[in-house]
Length: 382
Ligand SMILES: *Cc1c(COP(=O)(O)O)cnc(C)c1O
Image 1 (cartoon, rainbow, N blue to C red):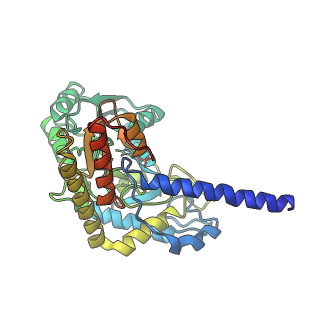
Image 2 (image 1 turned 180 degrees about the vertical axis):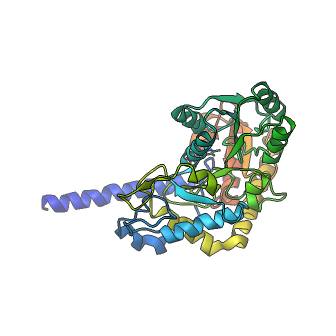
Image 3 (image 1 turned 120 degrees about the vertical axis):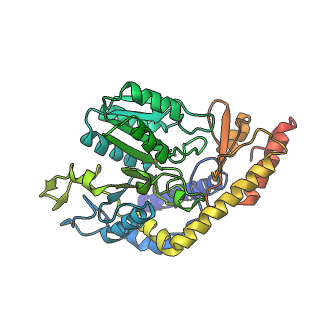
């Protein structure tokens, strides 16, 4: 064998091993919010091109090997879904929910440089880092037991600082319990305290992409009072590459736009070069499923979540779930079980998330494991 052949055979062995490992581990993931039911094989030919949606998707770039047109359709779809004002929306496909949150907070800071940012203690860990990067003064607000923000604490804290503009980061689906903050109630607080300068950014990374299909529809979108909304694309929609979407009011974004001759586009996005493949995945799912398909996808997941809760109840009476949530909370089981099923956990609680691709069969297998564990037997590891 030549060195080249040896290298090639090693390469395929290494890749095969990794693929086997990934496929068996993926089957056991029920604790992290990722869909596993997608098939984007039709998009494989695009892997042969240097896809790059550099710059603002709405301004053509001189670099044209990318998926800008479809990215714009994805943004238009979510703008409608989130009831943005006609002709006053803008956005782009990000690298994930965290970048979308960074962007929303950045816009808010440019509008209100002197504002204080309020967010509940159940907020995702990345938000504090973003606030640190942006150097924005901020105050954490208590959460209720469900994970939803405590409106009394919010109102009291804002009223102490009422001379300052207010930026709120609202959660539509907190990471641990999938609690939803009510944007409508936040607007009422602004009114009661006569706060004139305010901005609400919605962290919908987890549940923003299906909140519009839940009944009753939670108060989370532009018609409810949001100024920008970030969602993740690799969670409920599903993508082999992490991605997300930020949608903001266009007039907010116009304040930060700056023209760059080198790319022929506007430097309105956080990354310069941007993923040209991820908009394709999102566009594909939207086109294949349509609104009704996505609504059904939500209902199916809610059905599995209700099933999981019901099956867990007899062996774990403390099990609970926020209304219309895919997240089912249980007291943290022993480490073997947490590891085996890749459960996301805090100090006391753990959860499973019934994202698309999780079957009732998997729930049954998990429940059986937990039942074994409860009776004191050790859990079979493989
Ligand atoms: C997942 C998540 C994030 C981070 O999103 P990424 O897509 O992982 O960057 C932020 N907030 C919440 C509530 C999340 O669930």
